Image (cartoon, rainbow, N blue to C red; front, side, top):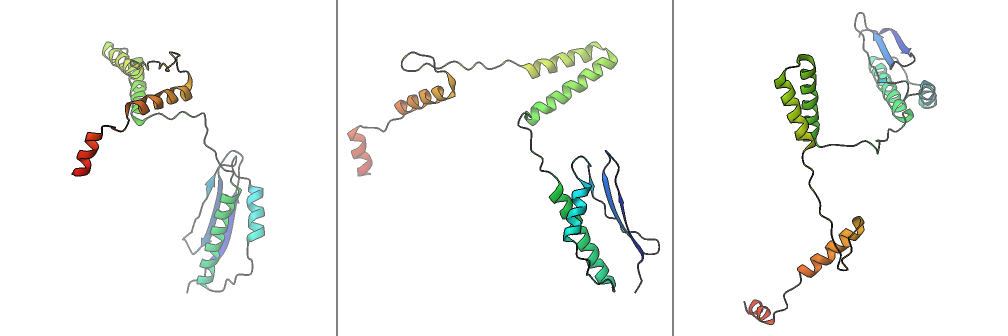
Length: 187
C-alpha cells in the first residue's frame, strides 16, 4: 500500500481575487486538487475559518489509506458547508426588467447591425439597421378606455375589472326558458 507523503494544505487569498482553497496530497508525482472559487466580496475568510474551527473533528485516525480518504471527504464537505453558510443570500433585483427571448434576440440583432453599419458605413447596412429599429419600436396597440354604467370613465385596474365583471355577468346568464328545461329533462 503506497504511503501518501507530505500532506499539505494551501490557503491563498488576495484582495479582489477569488479565494482558492487547494488541498494537495502528494503521491509521488500525482496531486489531488480541490478548489472552491468564490469572490472575496461575498465571502469572509474569518467567518469561514471560525466555522471550520468550531465544527472540525481532529480526533480522526489517519493510519490507513481509507482513513485518510474519509478525512479528506469530511474536510471537503466541511469547507463547502462553511462556504455555503457564510455566503450572504443574493436577492434578485426587483427593478430588473425581464424581456421575452424574442425581444432579447431582436435587440442583439439590432446591436450587431449597428456595429456592422458603424464599421462599414454601407447603405445596405443602414437600411437593415433602420428596419430592425422600426420592428423593435413597432406600432403600439391602443387599449380603448372603458365606461361604467354611469357613463363615467373607469380609472384604475380595480374599476376596470369591476366594470368588466358586471358586463360578463349580464352577458352570460342561465337560460330561463321553461320549454328548454322540459326538453332537456325529457332527453
